[in-house]
Image (tube, rainbow, N blue to C red):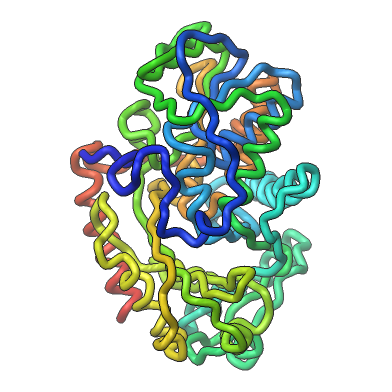
Length: 434
């Protein structure tokens, strides 16, 4: 199996083809770990989960070391669509049936707090990441539309959430310059942002708080015990607790995680600045995600480029025609962009679970992990860091609630799960098209 940390990227470098890289407020590179050190907490991974956990733990007085194999925000945290939505990855009606009303309500409250945690960190640490309210969920078909409107009504009546406005065909055309959709919902309680600058802002805040971050420090082995020992190729951290926050880049480091958290790739393109055409396509500064199973997600950048994510690839390596993967579905929705130049095209590795809910796991008494956000990690990964800090401090009820959601292992083990996923994703892709 390919090493995903290096399969598609140059070691220690952000993707040069990314618009986010081109517009990032970078930090100085942090020194690699060398030799042995001690800490209360060792965190593996400097994305949203790891950095949020580091900040929240440091606020509680813990000595924290973060080990990052590449650079701060290198993975999905610095490459995603930048959308922070409302609710969990599964709808509240599904959670109610699965867990009961009380647990579903508690999970809704955690998700609502996730958005507040995101905004609070941005405001407190003055992170310049273009945070803007508004995410529109666009429906292609009548069944998708009926489900979207029913969900909005359910949230309004059961959860007193009134920031979603249902849209019919006329309503959605008031927001988007396309005939592709028959309606949808617009959620002004959700938001979008520049994902890499947000991650770098969290890193800057963590460093200022006294967190020790070591980049280019790939973890090779975790010796469980009390204390645990976390080994890189050039050093070792002995810590009371370990937080594993590597998401789709962990490989086989922790078998209990890789059984339930599986890496997949997705792709984004950025057009040239569109000028006045941008305001005809997206008529206010909102982000959009549609009802395809292989979802299209898009928004305008601060300089009026279309940032379009979509397309699928069934291999660990990014395709050579990466721009075409995302451009093709873009033109189906917005044919008026056929003449727009593609200035940037990049891929990223995220992670999914069998039921698309994040995998909160206790690997042992002092080793915790969260990953597998399945495309909904901007707010929830930030909140996961807060729940990790609570659990380590002895207030584990919310972490354990999230961990209680049943997530079966991927069938086939590490060798066969990828071919099985390919078959499943091919079926869903065909369903999307026809």
